[in-house]
Length: 318
Ligand code: 3HC
Image 1 (cartoon, rainbow, N blue to C red):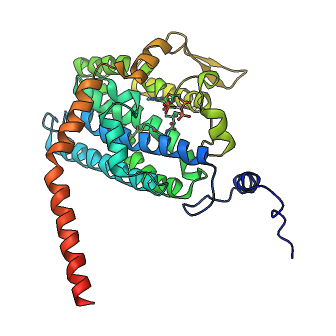
Image 2: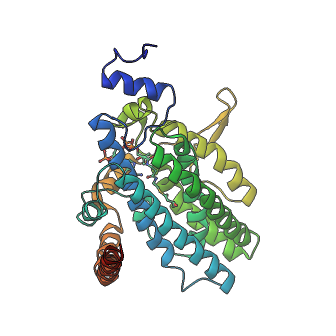
Image 3: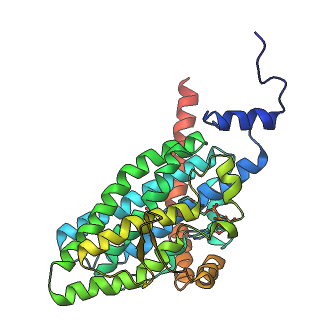
């Protein structure tokens, strides 16, 4: 029987697979631009996980109890694992770990803007878990259905762990809000600092996004930046009200006609300044990553030497 797609060009056959929701796997033909944008997005996602460990790592030695310390330790360790899944997914597209890390360390590659902000109080650990991981979940659950197989499969495991991250953050905020006035004030002060930078995590407005339209057409993205940002506001405003906190945006207002919250305008100058590398903590974050990479060189060398020795023994034994 004639193959119905054999008269199509490779690009047309590829798009037909995307439109039929057939996963694209590493050995499948794919347009160079598809490969390139996936390497860009997946590697930057991985960088975000690794750099995201730093602001929270700052509070591991300062956690208010052994229980909080062990929860935070476990969460930060999860983020490292998420980074490794994602680097591995990106490597299936032909890039290397060394290349991706060199791009991060040189400032050529990006990581999520949110990790440019300092974590100044324990309530920040609550906000990072509640808001930032909440935003990450909204962005990452649709990525479990992204068209590139290895990326989608990496996301399934990541999302399971993110749910724990978000719940522990919300629980920190709830504990503070049900505590002394000074603790509730600390929670409100942290929300004031983290609300707008979290809205920026979803990326620029759709009309200012050079990648979104194509990423939607290739089903890399299942929702646009603005759609996910709206979902986030609609989800988080009632949670802030439940905590007895006020979202720092006087334009937040339920819109019956839209069945969604209206909200104010993000400070896009701040967003683009951070994205371009001028974020508050960018120099510290990259410095910490470069230092960790250099100090970890001996571990990589030892692992490579061990692997080479074992391969040699197996060769001799064969
Ligand atoms: N921070 C830094 N750069 C950003 C950004 C942000 N919040 N939002 C957009 N950008 C960059 C993009 O990378 C792009 O630059 P590039 O072309 O040089 O890569 C430019 O700004 C234009 O943005 P676009 O919207 O056109 O880019 P995308 O289509 O790639 O959309 C994105 C941006 C929504 C972040 C998308 O890349 C994405 O969904 N990535 C996967 C999820 C991810 O990376 N999340 C980051 C947080 S991970 C996290 O929070 C871990 C949790 O455990 C704490």
